Image (cartoon, rainbow, N blue to C red; front, side, top):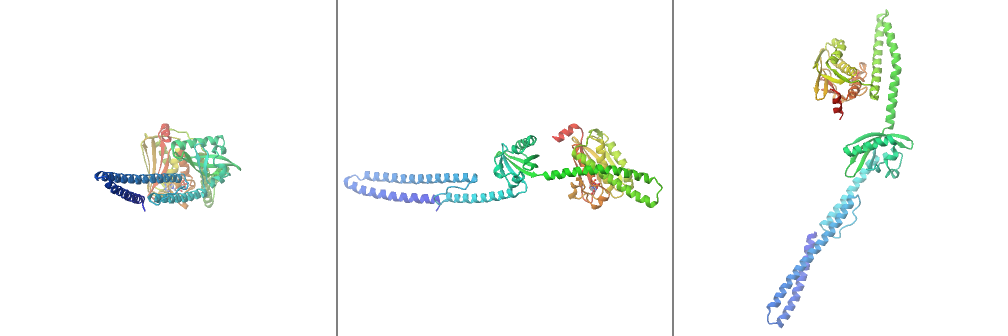
Length: 462
Ligand code: ADP
């Protein structure tokens, strides 16, 4: 039975009983009084008044009862809702069965569902391969998952409540503190890398941090990149060692080939010699490219930027590659305003242009057109090299700028797969961007941007 029905039923029964009782008593009194007094009017008036009073007091008692019951139930429900919000089981239950107790049942079910979700979330967090933790505003661990515990070679009991600072040295703590406060002020995900002390030495950890202003807590995703960093270092050391060690013998082979070619050799020997010369040239290009890339990525290649006109630079590159263009009967169109200048290292941008242009010539079918254009866009210059070659498939549009990524296996015979990676590194060192747009099978447009002047560089950076 519902609460209101129950209350009205109770009130009615009370009302009827008390009214009947009162009326019966009053009837007896009236009969008695009518024998005593000749005037019967006044006892009747008294009876009516008393009856009304009884009805009113019964109604008031019923309303009061209803109010008290409701207040008590609502207070229990509020306490239970607070328990659920705090992640605890609702403690009390309602005495009667009505709408409010139905609400109580819903609360209990809600708690069970939330609890199940919590347990599932905990399991996901614990079994995640990456470290996950939350830290309070004083950078103390509030929660840590199993992966982070094993990354830090510690225990959950030891970590929870301890400060992140206890795992870091001064330099790393400085980086971490600045990154955490940046996450708090900018309310964005901030990434940083620090070396963390563990029992077996030091682990290189990559952190992604986001701040929750409501809970005043930081949520962190932590990845152990120690072995990745070691591998990268080994690879770089290997590349520089091999490149340096190969350059000298290759240079002497090239010299010996040059001397040999001036000798009077049979046609067969000449053919073999030119194949050998081609192979050495390709090897030399590969070694030089590797060294360049190595220097660019290590930041040890110096870039000397100055404001330079673009047209003479592009013209020089087209001239340098004119033999290749002639062999394929290509038309080269240059659409650049002579007043366009950019803030660049001429030698490095020359390298970029030669690489993109030679690719455009290499991949263009015979008799097609290659267009080089440049135009100003606010504070930057955009240079575009468009060809009518096979184009780059959509899934390779960004991959072609990675080391050794080539669209076709056959490209290996004519290139090293390093040219565009070098171009990307050079353009990014200039503060610009590089990309390719292409409809596969319908040519491609490689474009890059350069700042107009040093101020543009600062505007871009900010
Ligand atoms: P590669 O020495 O092989 O040319 P790059 O880094 O310069 O190395 O280019 C990487 C790959 O991108 C090339 O092997 C080729 O598959 C693709 N590519 C570059 N330029 C073009 C182009 N203009 N048209 C079609 N594919 C291209």
